[in-house]
Length: 252
Image (tube, rainbow, N blue to C red; front, side, top):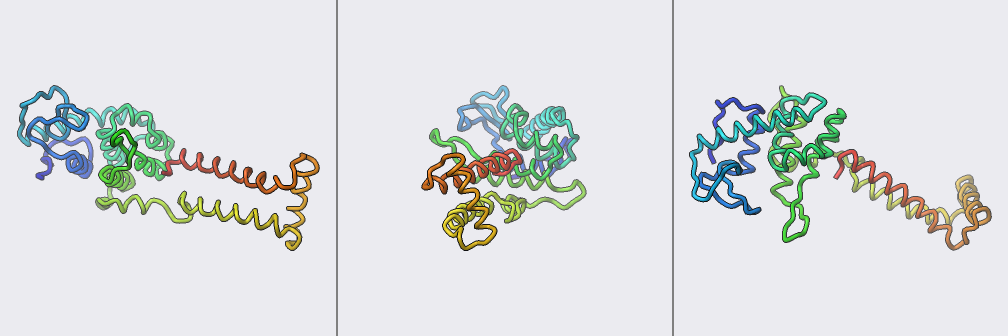
């Protein structure tokens, strides 16, 4: 596919323009999109009718005009002024999900809070669509979100971002990932059970567990056989609160 004319007055970096053009695809004749809307060019829908055609030059101009309007709207939503690459990534996201969805998104909220890495992670939350009524992760959306994430994190004077889903993996260190931390919670659960059973051989730790067990059984009145479930429920509450905090920080 021939890419849009770089000489046009694009309001976002050319990398964002290429990203949108490649993700949307170029169609020079009107067609019905999966949602049943008549579409032409790079996903244009305004005033499109069956039988309409266009040239690439027209499609390029329409895209440039559309991005100019969207960039202005996105900038108005940003209480923290975005860099050009950040703006390009957010405009690309808005081109796909819509301005209203962006306005309510975790990505925009975290950007405005100055939490740039978390905002970049939150961009990747928008990787699903309904397929036969079921919310499904789509490889095409995953790849597009990865490119937007990489563009968002690229300094304006830096090199072009990676254009593969590998950018998603690079954001999260293993020790900070939900999967690793979830595994740690599982290990902790097993550890609690083991400690309760081994309380008489662990010195001060065993004394602490014994004291907690006494509180649960004698002062609170929990039966002895319920002590371990009570400890595990407490751990479960901690894990749930941790997961909600992670989600607010843009983790998938």
